[in-house]
Length: 82
Image 1 (cartoon, helix red, strand yellow):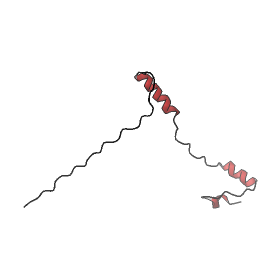
Image 2 (spheres, rainbow, N blue to C red; image 1 turned 45 degrees about the horizontal axis):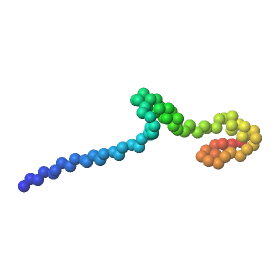
Image 3 (cartoon, rainbow, N blue to C red; image 1 turned 120 degrees about the horizontal axis):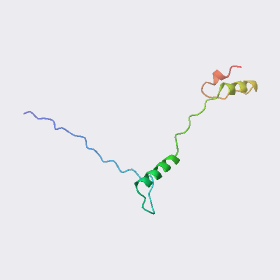
Image 4 (spheres, one colour; image 1 turned 60 degrees about the horizontal axis):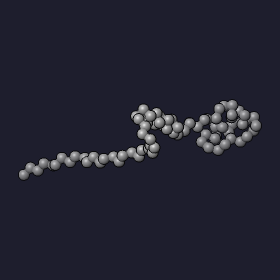
């Protein structure tokens, strides 16, 4: 007796619909007006945060001139030379 293994296909689950970005509560804008409104809303949205600025060499020279102790943290031993 030769039994073949049944082929099991993955079941695709439907993705839930995304929540609307905004809704029009008054009036009936056409497609161009909605596109313009969407562009403005997306432009006003938050952007990616700016990367943290690393202190310049001038900053460390100034700290040495003022004889300020180096701040603790990664690489503090490199900044501790006097």
